[in-house]
Length: 232
Image (cartoon, rainbow, N blue to C red):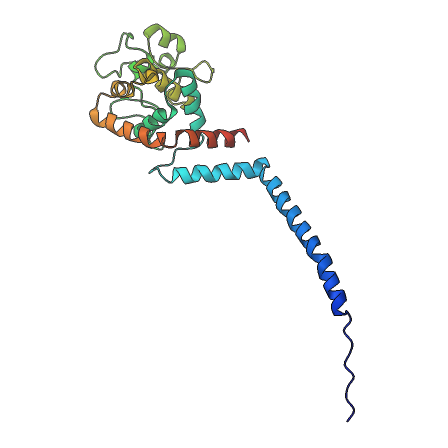
């Protein structure tokens, strides 16, 4: 029986080695180009935003209730205007209405809005109906009137310039709280006294300061991440 002739390889070992030697640098070049292309893509706004969002989420895991991201720029803007730490404003918001997540923004005592102002504190204790706890008999149109607030010495603020100082508007409410806390020393570092004046309760002060200190641990990181995310 005749032996079958073995087919010669299409490529000789020398040619194979030559091709490998040629392909290796090409593969390395492609890898390097792909690596730098990926790095360049990561600098695009969408990738920066994703990275910042991840950083925010990691920080928020340290809190029992996440600070709503849309409120943080408002706290920061109020801090810039009144000198009250934004983390203190966030702590008050957390304690007062659980970041406005409560069903009613009116307390049994009559405190109103996102940051729970008594009407007389908001419009001013010089109002003729103000006494006792400060509920007063104040019409909404008067309560939210910047001119009336100025007249009666209140702390309400028209933060967004719409001509109304509304405790149910988040910007107005936060700015009003910052205004109040600033007047009682928070802007000068006397945070404890300012918080006590906001609500004359040692337990209240303890609770607000607890969250203030907790949020302060991430003051700069959370501020930077949220602002970058907002800009994009």
